[in-house]
Image (tube, rainbow, N blue to C red; front, side):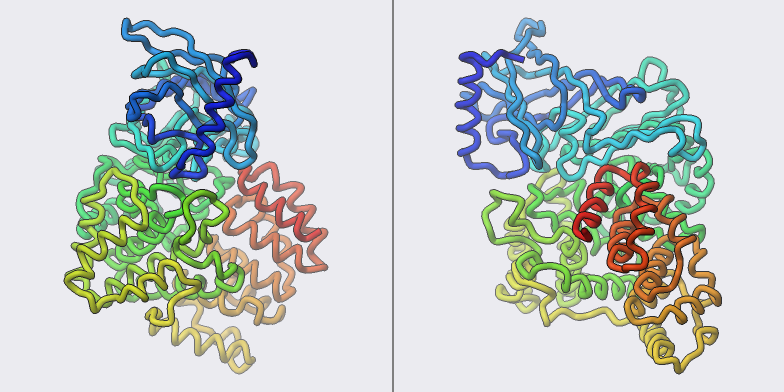
Length: 617
């Protein structure tokens, strides 16, 4: 690192200049209007005793602005020891660099001063044990208790905590890697994974399709592998591998269903890894290696719509990516729509309609907790601050609802080729909402103006809530269930007479959503006694049962304690702790549970639950 002399003054001036320049992604320091990464090579060693990755990153660069002489990369808590550039004579030489002051959300800009425009730059560094993307687990936190485990979660801007990159979805690059890990542990990445590799000489990977940085992913642990199809396999801890493989046997059918709708799968293989329970989300669509929560293993394949969702990202998100996180709905709204179509193709219209109704009902219920200004799909504000971005959870169902509306009005014979064309024409590119609107007008609305007016389109994109013109899904099976639920809540139908033994998971989820805050403690106890809901292996059902029980004042401490100690998915644990903290009789008990459970949670989950406890104080 250079001393604070004249060079530091030059860097300070450059920093100020960058800060005032037009910036397409406010969450990145990178000047990708000047230079873009086209390829990344990582050579790293995993040190579990110090909880670090150390080595170097080699970036291949495409210089756009021929006058530029500074490379700016995103970092967060990286300890950078040196930077080298490749000269025309093939020799590596030292380059001056400095790290900006820490900004809480964005980390620190790494500014590299260059005497010329090199094709390649190497950054030697070490990650911090507290890297936001990485969770380092002790052996006792794993199933066997024999070896530690580590996994990453780079979305949205956490890749910079384990690699110096242009950490923005606007930049796509190919990558390769060599990773050293302790004996007895396997490394997998979001790249080509050889199931027969031994790790001798390091674990080697290659991703030949260009991806954005948030899809960089790595996991290291005691892992076994099982094929589940001709182009898919599942990795998991040995004690979980058989259950995982059994749950995922329909994977190839899902790939084929998606291909029949939206064209060929372009990533060659679709492998998956089932991570330890602390994985903070349901799934992460890392290309070639989807990361999954073990909470999707229900034993009866009733939650495999999660796999359909992550697979759908192979078209919407991974193939066509939001250009910045302002346009997040282009990733998740599209993927949520495609998920329902895959579910319908595999499991029929009745199941798909139930899935859609539950999704839409949960979206409508969520509006009460979201400020109106955050309920749009995308903000009209300039993309200069993440503070203006809309609610990241609502864009999933609302974006899907917009596409569903277009499909219903245009007809599938028109809409399906339109959507496939979007994926084909923008493959391996990053896109904005304006680009989609332009495509929509030219390729659908120009020939079918009756499908949607400009005013209605703007209401969907920029308005609060769900437009009144939206058609709500209505499942006949759920309507029959609603009649039972209503009579049961009024005490007119005995608990034992509910037809719950024939309900599928979606029906249970719908029922439990609708009794939350309405059922009595006695009714929740009867549900538990008659149908064993508190002992279900389906985590989506268990979560909703526990939440409704806490609201009703029914004591579920024993099974809930086990659940909170064994499940780290934010979607489940944050609402449960929030509900417990609002109950005066459970607040102290919740503090005790969290004291034991916190170390088992991912850093993102810890932050979210910490906020819930701070708010409760």
